[in-house]
Image: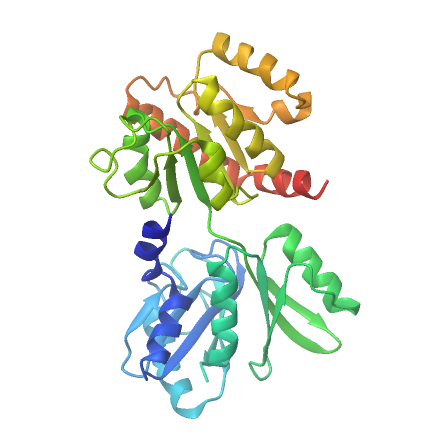
Length: 112
Length: 236
């Protein structure tokens, strides 16, 4: 079981966050806090981002990650956590949105 | 969230203990709650509900918006028998996200060559399970159809409230198995939790197909209601 756990560790966003931060990188964590309709990733799903825009994990099926990463780089700079909301009803839906028709709330915070 | 809190949470997860991270959405302040921690008031009730359901979510308590992120241990699969089906099951289980271990005291079967990429224990289940006890987040598949090897771990899995318990063998083999286990003191309700013959009925024929049917049945048990059943059984 040990071998398997080690193999999967690099896939786990919260382990990655600890490793990155321990290595001196500035890190933000994004968490899906609420979903409506058919959202691609369930509540609690996480994405970790560093100040260079490297990321690991997912909060959607790739639909809104780009926008979350941009916001996260900002959160790392300012230190202020924020709640983001995405959905087809959003006026920016043509740019970033969930083509599946769902809506999600994503909380982005800096790892201190 | 601060790094110390993240480290505490990761330590709980690594030790296969359920934990909830409570985050105040207004400022990102976090609090770690372990299963069994005494927490009073509305938050205590919300935490209890979240541990039972395993579902994360937002909740409002005393005018504060809180997010409860429930972390339950990742599913583990313990396979009894280093047989042909287990060889096919090992890579599939890994892709599906299961932490898999194989236990078989027959050293001719349990060889590194046959199981290069999986935790392999060439010992009796009685000994192997002492170091890695079964829990409600573990599935057990008994694949040797040898009572000397399978019966002990099947009993242990039912007692531990494993979310899935499956056993290979024909209906006739299984009927005899049930008689033995009943004599060993297991109740009818406990015995009914054994999936046998093992696997979803997709008319699987080859070892690899039986592995697919078995893994599908394990995923069904995890995602439908058997996990909650297992936890309830352990609590009782």
